[in-house]
Length: 184
Image (tube, helix red, strand yellow):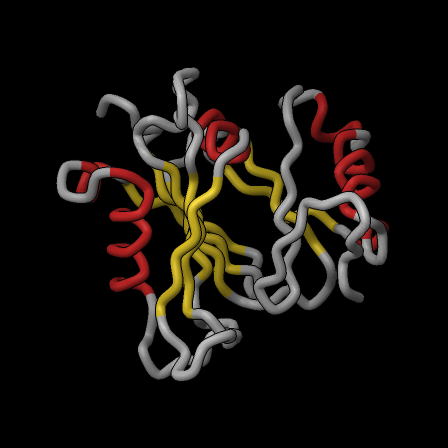
């Protein structure tokens, strides 16, 4: 499948489990991250669940051009139900930067996250798998300091030397700016 890594990874933060789904049944029908994200959300989300319910999925996707070095080749998307509108409805956001490319280089076309961790953690994606890593030592740090501390984790450098992009989660909170802090 040209442009696709081949896998969608389902991560459950409550159970600390993962399961892979093949991209092959989606790639021909849903071009790009937005189409894939919308279809996955349609299949995975229960309409009666509130936006911040642990059962409501947060879906991160790339398209077939993620990792392409040309103009706009590293777009990626996040979709879920939004708590900021009434009534709560499906919401989609599109981003640039290197995160989408690195997700593709990790062997993934999409990541479906649900559940609620019982302690702070981050997801380390590499070689098509997800490791649930303790993030207690990162709680309360700024985004730049957190990024540097994750980069300094010797257990991940043997596997992957590259960019570290961060999505921090508490109530679907997204941050990658210098002066903001992870809510505690």
